[in-house]
Length: 280
Ligand code: AMP
Image (cartoon, rainbow, N blue to C red; front, side, top):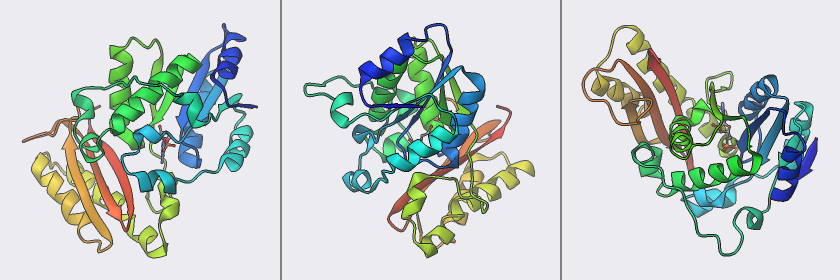
């Protein structure tokens, strides 16, 4: 496994293997089983696997979140080596955003609600850095987690609109044994918060269970999410949503299929989670 820092080194590795398929897994590091599930899928489907590790400052709307974000490059490299990754790109900030950098990508409607509304500028930062990653790696396939469902929708839209010639692969959310979706931010929870954090999963299960018993009314599904979250004293709800999985617009009346999603603060840590219901 090669670990490199410059764009030129990534391009050289890619140019040396023009006939081989490449899979790219973009990450911000502090790797866990969720990230590794993407890496394993990429390993199965491609001759070469590249992983980027870059805590992208432009997608953080909250400066304290950026400072507190865990950075564990050495441990990450060990985990990736064990997964037989070919190339890791861990650039310093100036390599991605050199002095004078002044271009951003703004995706439209699909990026506006939910995480887009709660975190101004977030998806501009994501779309811009992912476009750069696509240009640097020129992968055949790029792998993203369904845990960040709106991110997948935003990147699909961007790839379609800007003619990126690659497959965008969405992989299922990997969870802890008690249902909590794995996240690098979970490490910041204290013991009581860690216990409380399962309320996101529990709220989704309540709503999915209602769906399975025939509930289709979007308002009632939202109320089930909200009411379950508010049973947890340590949780503060940011939003709950029952939205169209492609457009991310809220559904009114009856749903045929939906993305159930939410964001909540558990103490000072903001967590998100989601599940899809109906025919996808
Ligand atoms: P991050 O390092 O948080 O930017 O995540 C990098 C990629 O891993 C993104 O595509 C995430 O959606 C994905 N990911 C993060 N957590 C999980 C999880 N629990 N299950 C599946 N994918 C995940």
